[in-house]
Image 1 (cartoon, helix red, strand yellow):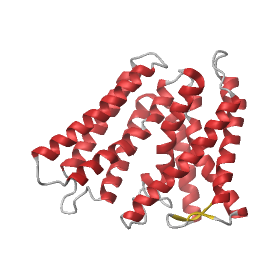
Image 2 (cartoon, helix red, strand yellow):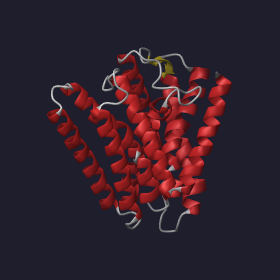
Image 3 (tube, one colour):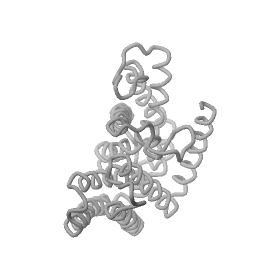
Image 4 (tube, one colour):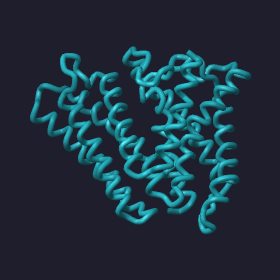
Length: 287
């Protein structure tokens, strides 16, 4: 299992590097595909998906809105100036509001096929997976020097997770959330937060500031604080995804990634870290 998990992890990191470095429509297609799979995993896990059909009206609506949202986001960002935050916010707001309206249409004109809880869960799944993970695209393509900044998301998610695991194995004594994740410890959590802060500081000092334009210099202290907060939020995202699984009595969201499970099992912390890093950068840099 460990060997399989390690190989899958290495392949994921390599694919992430290629896709994020290329950016553009390749990144759009990759994130859209990840979002569609993640959305389906969530609807299946939370009861929106009905067993008698491969895909129902709520799921089809979410799929369509995910594609429309990513198409609109890509066109808006690629056709606007870098750091045009207004364009990003407009697409973000329109995507969320229009998706809610679409789900309401499906609910009303197919009543009483779906319960209100299914409709609200379908909307939650759309915001949770497709919208939140799209902040990776906003950072990479919407911010100046996004090709360097986007890796901060993975440092405070996958990086902090690695630090937390190492510290937890060595010093873990007190359980953080035993009912959700018995292996996570308070000591490991502290190690993950401190590790992310250190990783952010090192990455900022050795990569971001030397390789970006002179007018763009990320404050070292601010970057380390962002890393610490991002790691903390990533842990909450990880535990929240676990809570959904526990509520619905499932072990994994899927079997797509050998040794890891589904998209939501591997990207649970990335999904919640991406918007935090985006807004954190907006505050620190003043964009």
